[in-house]
Length: 239
Image (tube, rainbow, N blue to C red; front, top):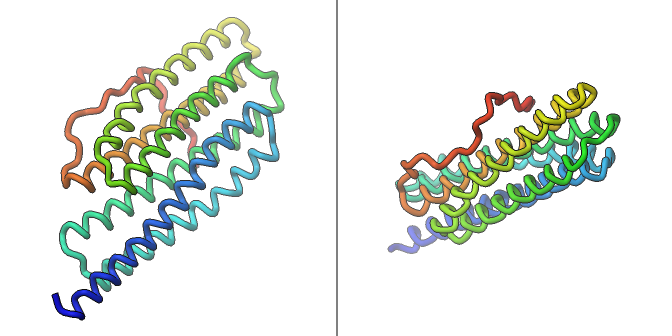
């Protein structure tokens, strides 16, 4: 390879590393948003919920920057097929991270409403455990991306079923509370939407894992991952 060719490759690698650093920064903010949103509900902490809502702006700004850097790299470097796959995967990963951030923000919004209501016994802890499971999936999905570990990404993909099962159990629990006492209906509806938000977070994290598998193997997983959500509702209220 000529000196010029080596320079172009080195420059391209530096650009990709810079974009990857943005993805990891974005991922760290999203992980924190998931846990902080769930914690704000459990502690009935409106101040923490507001920080989550405000923090979503930084996540959105990072996604925009990733897209700008990827567009610039595509225009200037004209990457070969394998490198093009990397850039496109990065853009899809960043889009999924941004959506998870939106769900965390929406969870925090509902927390601010729920603190004004009588708490539903055990619900906040169950929501936090579900959020913790999704945050663990997120951490492993990002590790799989950095390490180009398709096996770890596949493990994340399969764990989405556990999150779905947790959601189904919560849904049934909320129905029971509502039937036992109509005064619980409003709070349980908000909690249901929160649980559905977290279930959808799991879906987006699973999409990140699938992008990692595609990045490593060149093939998107074809088998349908097990979906455990059997409830009739999908109104997550994300805005």
